[in-house]
Image 1 (tube, rainbow, N blue to C red):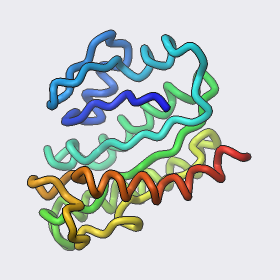
Image 2 (cartoon, rainbow, N blue to C red):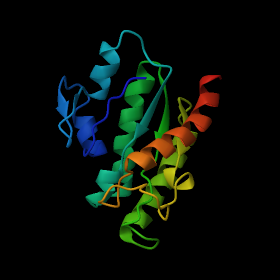
Image 3 (cartoon, helix red, strand yellow):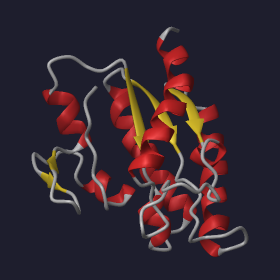
Image 4 (cartoon, rainbow, N blue to C red):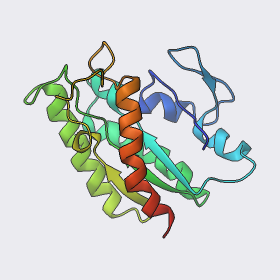
Length: 170
């Protein structure tokens, strides 16, 4: 497992940083851009899971623009022969049903699923809201009530594993 996380960045930021040798996230962690990371790995991964878009929606980016940037990230993987799984932005307790964030988030999910139907190297689009609802309690969310906290991230990871492992056996 290789992590190329860019916490606090938008999908647009990640596209801009595709070839960067040094990307600093909001927590001060350093990594590389996605294309650079893939190029420098000793072997290509079997699968790349990309989760982005939450910060784009938090900045009121237009859903079609968010999805276009998400597509670019996936295409970087596909060009080198790596299949992907797309994780949509999760629902957020700070954005209840009917809010502009949740309405835009659902549009992003729909657009991602539509795009993925025509992208054979995109193995699945998974909506984290179907795994962990925004109403989930028990420390699932960071104080911003927009991002998963450590408990929510761990639960998401365990639920994703059950969905992703079968994709690796294809």
